[in-house]
Length: 119
Image (cartoon, rainbow, N blue to C red; front, side, top):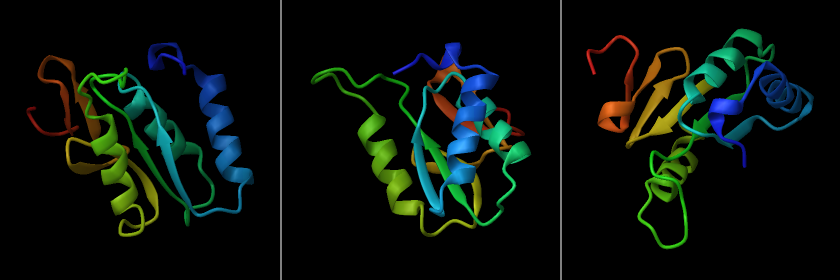
């Protein structure tokens, strides 16, 4: 439970090392949305096992009690798509799967988009 604005290179290396040491091929990582794309790009750059599939997901609206949040939907969406995407690093949000190196957060609109789209 760390605000993603506080995630640093050391934290990203811990995530990377955990995945590298694990024998599993599939990973779902819940992550704060502010820096989720940066962590996805870090993994893409440093992950040596190209047969692993990693999907980051989170929520624009934090899960807190009975308050509406997109978190449960995003998590279920990521789980449903984990076995169908090619090995790599992805972000699952807003009912879409984005490649980890081609995603951006649009804070003003409360959603993610392709890095190369106009938003």
